[in-house]
Length: 371
Image (cartoon, rainbow, N blue to C red; front, side, top):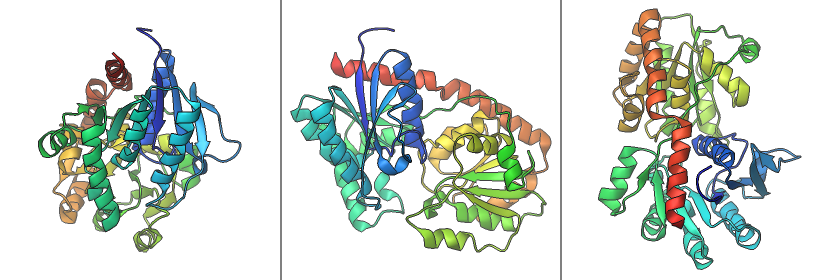
């Protein structure tokens, strides 16, 4: 271990173990590595993230579970406010990581009590389709407030870094998400779902319009193949959209709902092809996971996705269903092309998206704030 022990608090995620999205996965991977390097990490969790009895520790990280309003616009602000009270009364962590631009209201209070703040953002969150007009206004104003007052800002893509620098006048620290290259032995999740290894196309994510899963379903409906399409995910805040997706008459398309942990790893490791059709994205942890497992990937050609895959995958013009259908029809039976894409994906993860190196970047940032 180099240097003194750091004490770090993470606010604004849904908590650990990770059951939701990329920020939770990143907090897990980075936090456990910081603990292994001798640091103290406390993560504030929402009660609904874990059933009772809720764990107090997770891979050495301390977990604090607090209630929240499980409503889209109030969930994060209410939980962060409660976490802030607990942090100031009970915790001594001098470094506080605030997940998402909507947490910026906590910055002046933390500064008043001598804490250093890192706002961890994922680009222009206010452009995401799930937010209404008031929420978009709040997130944009909150980001501008954080730009003026946060001690540091971490962005997860070069495009977000450039946006904050050129449009908001603040230099940020670019640190991407990562992925683990690992083996997966079991197939019981596939057996439960009636799947054969290497015989299905996969998507994993929230079932919201901006994730573009509607493009994938429409494209796949026109592909001539006996292989299946597995749509993993859900969205409790938008059940009407989810139900509309499930109205497809194509019996090859399966909707198993949320799948986490070992089940997720099995599905990812054994898919024939992973498709990321997102209209809005940062550095997608799920996309990185697919590449780390050696799975060939096809993405919606937005700049963030193209930066993530480099030359390790294929892309279709944003929102172009016909182009996506053509790609799927062309490569689903091309074993040589699929194998080549998979090899390139693994190599790109090794070179650019290693969690150990990413954790060291966060450690250097934290030390710099205290020096």
